[in-house]
Image 1: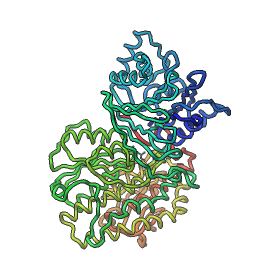
Image 2 (image 1 turned 120 degrees about the vertical axis):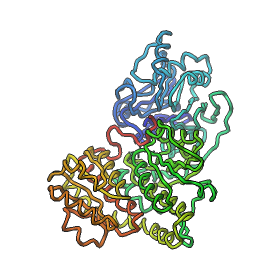
Image 3 (image 1 turned 90 degrees about the vertical axis):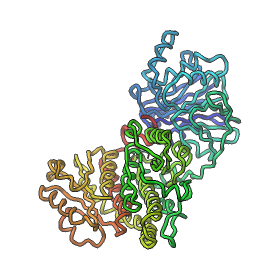
Length: 608
Ligand code: M6R
């Protein structure tokens, strides 16, 4: 969603803010703007589109200021135009504010402010906040922000500056991420650490309901009720290289190719070969508590929801525990049945997805133990869970999730193995699995080395209007993931289906223009999937099969084959998804799409 950067220090703020915005662009990018306090007062610049448009508006000469805030916008209220772009300023133009989130009671507040003579310039929910702060301002900016926030319903991460306080940023958070970066005679505020990593790796994650008064050499954090909070400084161990493209054309391609490494990171120190088990210290649950679990609910959104679906197969197969997988946006608004034997697993790359966060909180309120499977270490879901496992995939910048997906599936496989070994999985079966798990990173590398085959297939089908993805059993969620990857970055309509379900409807769509990607591995349903392939071919559908190395019969029965190495049937999603990621990537490149920043999408969906 929207990205916030703020700087206060002794350096020129403009280039720091612009660089920070570029690093946050992946979060939301329909428009951008910045405000800085100068010797002549507040200066505000805005533009529609990418940060380079904003740079063009600003021109060659840098504005002299060492104090400012900036924003990339992903529109919720009001179309993406210059007027609606943040920062927003009060009527006098002395106070400027940027906001990520939604002010839900903005209509009521707007009516009230209009009666006091406020004139509104924008269609946004955010603008009321800057007028509200102004209305409470009597010389103490922190206090004005605090009183204003007591009137607000909704979610926010905000940064506020004023010409009357030329060395101060007020930051506040409720439901939208915000981090303070701690530098030498300079401090930063941002929606995520990537915006400040060039300058500092020492950060303080803000909790919901706090207000921070940040100056160049201090930050004071209190709750909205004025209770002082001691900041917990954390060192971020991401390097700058990790958030740069490193010679690849796109972050997505870089992240696809990082998977042998990221999968190794997900299993490092976690495989116990002798006992055929996984070591997962972060779960924070005793053996008795884990043995007590008789139902697992998994909640997530998008790609993370697909890894949850795979986890259902894994946990039910290995641990014989019943698993429900639900979209977080649905879970939070029903009345879930939860008891002391239920655990909820929240899966999220960013750890900030609003629906997943709310679902997790709902479950916690009902007394459920919540485990997080999260990538971002300091994120709200990571901090709010009772325990969990970090996936250690490193920063994922491409909007289309790739390396986070495989690392999630890997970690969920380890959780399933652990639960299974406590119940019915023998040492021998556990050892078999652990050995096969260890082979996965090099097998992924082998598939990646075959990307020329996939590129050629992309060259043939990049103009298709529709794609169908079919899979069965544990590879059905991979079909869903393949379809999601294709539609989000290439804008081709694609659907994932359980292969046998095709004849109950989607078969009507099949003709000679319809590419059908089928995951047809040598597993117990191989023959059934081959029958489904025959049904597609009989209607002239073009079949691209993902098949097991050594399968000599399949090539004659389909149009194209992409082979993946053999592994345990439960681990196949970790391999079968790789060609689907590459296929989407090369199709989108061929269509000239914005790979890392597809239209209308944002990396971290921090609004409902
Ligand atoms: O950060 P999260 O894993 O919670 O994000 C969930 C979804 O928004 C995300 O997976 C989305 O579907 C991706 N664009 C998929 O590539």
